[in-house]
Every structure is written in structure tokens, then in C-alpha cells.
Length: 278
Image (cartoon, rainbow, N blue to C red; front, side, top):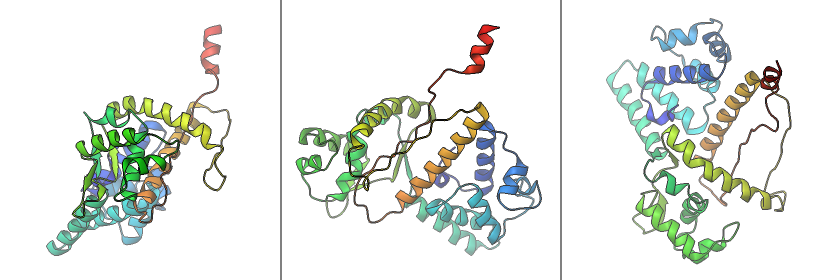
């Protein structure tokens, strides 16, 4: 599903959210409406079909039901106002608000540079770290990394990031991010990220030895059906989006962190084993 700032029709966004959830679970209009606090089991569908409007309270309930937080919720409010405005001036004001939010929180869609960006864990780290250290040399940036890398590696990352337009210099000559998030098409992203996940998983092991107030590790070993797996996967996706929204609004960044969300099998599928034995 596309980032919310790529939409200008709140009904289209709601319908895409519904279709996305329905593909992975037994999600229904009844469940969607109930989750948003509406007594009518078909109210969300009626709204998406353009046959009813969302009230101010309804906007908040619907946004919460879709897991929107931070700038995503602000954008959804503006998008609903734009879609339901009855005067030209209100419509224009709402649209300008949408543009302002989208400009700050827009997402860079990458294709050709995607694999090179994820080819090394250093690229996303340097992209976050360089703007926090205005005027710093590559060597100074390198010493701030866990694990420490060389000045040459930092310089290589900086050269790529500026060439790809992921970092740029502002009027003061300070490096800043051109976009807050990076993504590619689903197929390209999935392939490129495999190597990144391997590298980041390796970095997690020595991080266990960091002070407990600087890192958080927890885990669960559990038996699951495919239905439960899909439900947990949806929750993880929703949780990740909320984390991204919180991080995007942080104006007082102190460190660069990595959050790994991992859910993977430790055994083979027992039902498949039963079928093999028949």
C-alpha cells in the first residue's frame, strides 16, 4: 500500500487500506466499521462509496482504526477536509495543508539506486548521522558508528548519498535529508532488503552487550496457525508504520537506532508433514 502522502482522496485511501487488510486476513467491512466505533456494520463501505461523510469525531475514529498517528493522522484530517469541503476557499486551504505535510514527510521512491543504497548498512546509518553532525569530517562521523568504520567508507557513502539525491546541502552548506523516508517498488525493495536484513541481524548480536538503557531485546517462541501468523504480520506492519511516524516527527535526534522486526519459523510446517505421511 502506498504511503498516505501519495493520496489526495481519503475514500481511495480507506478502500486501499481495506483491500490490503482483506488480502492478508478475513477482514470485513463489518470489522472495519466496528473497529472505528460505528454501529452500522456497513458504514465504512458507505463512506468509501461516497454515500456518506465522516464527522469530525468519525475522522478521529477512522484514523485510529487504520493505525494512523503523527503526521499520517494530520494528513488524513486534511485529506478528509479537502474531500468534504463545501466552499472553494476551505477546499484550497485543506489542499495547501496536505501539500505542506507531504513536502515535509514525502517518500523517495528509488529504483536504480535502491540496491546500492541497501548494499551496505553504512549508507542508511550515514544518511541519518551526517545531518546530526554539521561540518564533521568523514573520520569524525566514522568514530560515532557502532561498529566503528573507516573515514574512507564514510566518504564513499557520502558521495553516493549526495549523488543519489538522498542528502543535499542547504543554504548554509549543511547536509540535510531531501526526504524523510526511502522506498522502492515492492518487488525491488523485497530483493534489495534481503542483504540489508542479513547485515543488520549480524549487528544486533554485539549490541546485546550495550548498556540495557541503550538497547531493548525481547522475544517470544510460540506455536501459530497461518491465520494467526497473518494477524500478527498485520500488527507488525501497523506497529512499524506508527514507529516511522513517531521518528519522522522527532526534532531532537540524539542517536541513530535500528529496529528489527522479525517473525520467522523455527520448525517445518506440521500439516505439510502429515500430508507427506498419508
